[in-house]
Image (tube, rainbow, N blue to C red; front, side, top):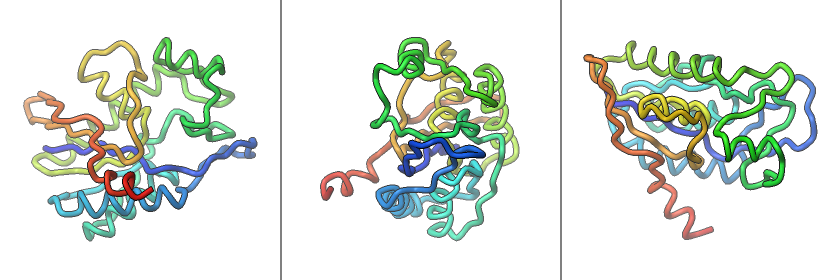
Amino acid sequence: MNLLLIRHAEATPVLEETEGGSDPPLTEAGREQSRLLGAWYGSETIDAIVASPMKRAAETAEELARVCGLDVEYVDGLAEYDRAALTYVPAHMVDRDDPDYRMMIEEGTYVPGPGGEDPDDFRDRSVACVESVVERFPGATVAVVCHGGVINVYIAHLLSIPRMLWFYPENTGVSRIAAARSGQRTILSVNETGHLLGHRESS
């Protein structure tokens, strides 16, 4: 089967702590990124769309689904490791001297906040969830709209990279995996962003 791992579009920052956790929607720029994603990949034969239930992933998936004429299946196991966080700070707004950020850059992992998920549990959960999608859709092309952390740990698993967080997937970046019934996994591309070129040139 052909697996498209897609990071969500740009989400709205949540800089003040939000009771019950932050789950921000897309920004206006994020909605445009989703539109460009749908316009580009909607011409491919996508058989199913599976997504994290978090708003930034769900809204991205819904635009692709609209173009493809499909429904979105929401899978809780695709949620990001920060789902319990009280804030959401996009990478371009992060304080580069923040100790948690330095740990992510230098050690490729994160410190779970209150109620957060242990990194090893997150890695195991994410890999198992993506593999379950592969098993459920043999011979199909499936778009999985999720988060940078999920994409990082799954591709790191395929490449036997010890770091959990080892590259930065762009918003709506697409990574392709060919998954054979034999269990072989072949990485065809990482972080495709060609669909955003027109947007970048006009912004």
